[in-house]
Length: 496
Ligand SMILES: *[C@@H]1O[C@H](CO)[C@@H](O)[C@H](O)[C@H]1NC(C)=O
Ligand SMILES: *[C@@H]1O[C@H](CO)[C@@H](O)[C@H](O)[C@H]1NC(C)=O
Image (spheres, rainbow, N blue to C red):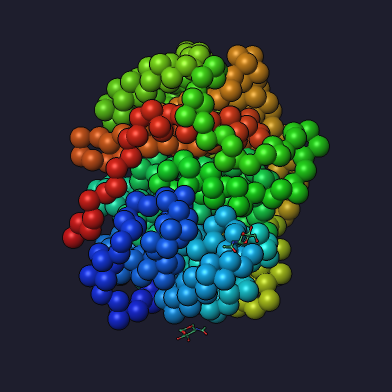
């Protein structure tokens, strides 16, 4: 879902890089995974400089069509790349970090004029979060790319993010830039954020793996908030393995939940090819399969085929089960989600903006005025700030909001939680990504894995969801499914 924040699109790309350079490399970079890149570094078959000099012309060539990347700082990227190569040569401790020398595309949840150039301010977003964490500091140094929140968010340049598989197809949002650029090989891996579907939906529509972790596991510090109760950040990658490597680096190992113990081992340990063996999977059809049927019968037939595969791989399938009150959960206006989020957004965004070192806007009210005064930064047809205005009218968490929050808790408890416990499930399996609404209100995790392509080549995904902190199980299931099916193929690019 869109955050409806003003966006300014800036694309700065060095013109001195020619495409032919990238074709000469000894190591095939297109589709390369983190582990293959790390191996190539070790074997001295690849340098980080070569890696970024592959991606930069790819961005230059494909981005005019895809609009997945809003900002690249090629000078910094190349300087940082050289530094990574030096660090590796000198065997420095930084070079032993898991994502050292791996380019990461970051979602830019908001860009306001002055903030664009302020790396320590709202511009840096995730970049500034991870730069505070020494373990993943190199991510931000490499990750000096930003992705747009198009298409649901307005973009100042009138840029519409395109689905790299079929340009006329919806890429979904709001982490669409990450989900567009990663399958198109404009970067190695990417990160998105999800409040309600913003990782799982674009991952499904763009044939990539998206992991929406349990809310609270990755730190949201310095990321522009929508609803701290639902916000989370997660990887969007071409393979489950890559996504899990990234997930391992963004989790807050010091996170403590009084009820749920945090998995102490690395998520990597759960990349098991036989991970489906003995797993109890609940197939939840209503209303997801009905919603998919309406638009895509191939996706439905493929889903049935996948259920057979899950069974063949050793899973125990529990079919014909339903989430209580699912029809209410699917309607944010009825469930209370909308009421809660409107108030939560104002509180969270005001706190965030107030805390910035430098910012032309200090409150939601300022942002609204900024938008009114700068209509040229918004496309006319997409210009509007009804959600901002409604949010601005709220006055904190009052009786109405408390009732909405209590209702959401009830819906989760009697819904997914009860279903999982009653049936002793390890995960639920759904077609497409609309399960995100159920996962959102409970803070639950989910993983999207590419599941197929329709007759026009438009991708669709399959989603595995579970209760809080069930990531290890979900990873075992998603990885084993991916390895058994190997469905994802790169888009034919660039389509002009
Ligand atoms: C590089 O450093 C690691 C640990 O700091 C050490 O175990 C390893 O032997 C070093 N490699 C070389 C080639 O010096
Ligand atoms: C941001 O950086 C660009 C390029 O360096 C510069 O042209 C522009 O004036 C800067 N914007 C602000 C608000 O400082």
